[in-house]
Image 1 (cartoon, rainbow, N blue to C red):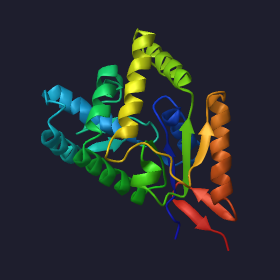
Image 2: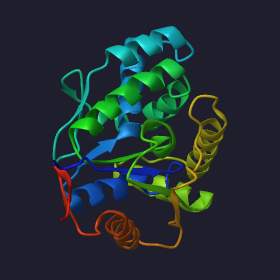
Image 3: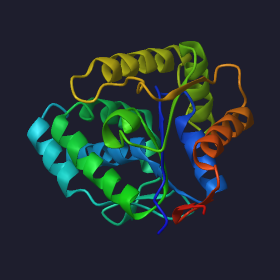
Image 4: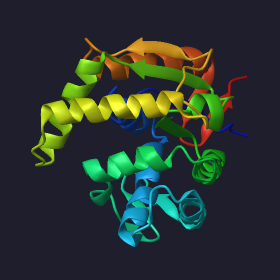
Length: 236
């Protein structure tokens, strides 16, 4: 019987995780799970409901109640049946997502959902604790990184492409604050898994990073095995 494959891609904001995970999943025919989008969806719900971002218990209740789904092939995300793909991509939601992600109950609710998806399909998951907490036994673990100024430039370009005119200094400051929170939080901080491959993307194109990741996946899983969306079939 084919074995489900999990590819875990971790790293700080702006390192290219979402873009690379999406492209690698498409190349392999795996399900792409944007874990950051899951936290953003809960944050969006909290903001809409007027929930205080310091109200840990109410936020944990929201996270446990949220029904989050990804449309196969399109990468669109649904919160309680509503397509929120665009709504979760604002700076306000991004900041709120980073703040609520420090709460243990919120993270546990999201982890359970992520593991459920990983049990049902071969997946590429990206986030900040996929290879350390969510799937410590992932088949392939990669830690993407880049210089802070490069990551800030990428985030600024991404926002402008969405029609959002923002102050570069503010983007850099918000990114630095997110880094601080992600690395120092008590619950599942951002760290590189000991068995993850470190990949600095500062001077690499998207295509170069994609090929580097695919090469690693094939090295780890391709020895006489057939890679498919259904899992890995061990060769005779």
